[in-house]
Length: 267
Image 1 (cartoon, rainbow, N blue to C red):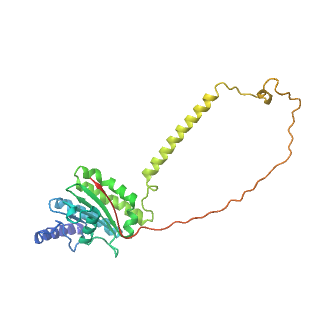
Image 2 (image 1 turned 30 degrees about the vertical axis):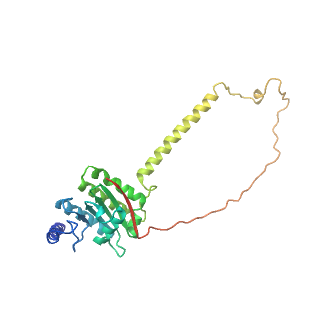
Image 3 (image 1 turned 90 degrees about the vertical axis):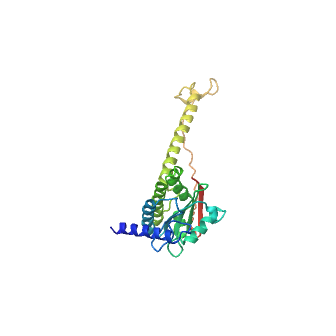
């Protein structure tokens, strides 16, 4: 019941701000209520906004890291460079949580169908590293390509939830930790091993077609090549060689910075 009331109040505030400030760039202008979805007029309907904003607010509050979505007609109204334009919008809207304004913003520019994932803050940069950004983009690009923006934003929020959860546990998403990548790597190694084994076995078999197994040592000597009159095995000595094995240790550390990082493309 409380969630429904909050959704209604948020929608009313949004409509009021649109009516009072008709010149604002966003139909979802910043208000005192937690807001995570912003869009220029006509790019998203109110019902989709309310549902997405509620979903993004839940994930953002869970990890204290903002998950934002912004839709504009043309990013070049802020800057001709997409990355700088996204940074200007992030600053203009005052996005981000915690003292370092931690969060991620998915910006869609509709004129030329550009998108950018802009990340800010220490925790957010750990959760959305370069590989994680690629995984995140794969979650929404298919839907955006079909102009199903509500479904694309929903997938975006759900994937952010997964990536933030991993980072909160101290195991941010990496290529090596991705189960899909590990399965593909295992299957490739298995297939390569089978192919190499078959090739080696075929080569050995082709070379042994005319070879018959011998049971006596003198059968490997050419006729008249040697005459064995006495057979005796005598143990003479044993040699031992010891090699010292050095122990080597190494450490690694470090974490993501708190500034901006980004990944962009077309949808």
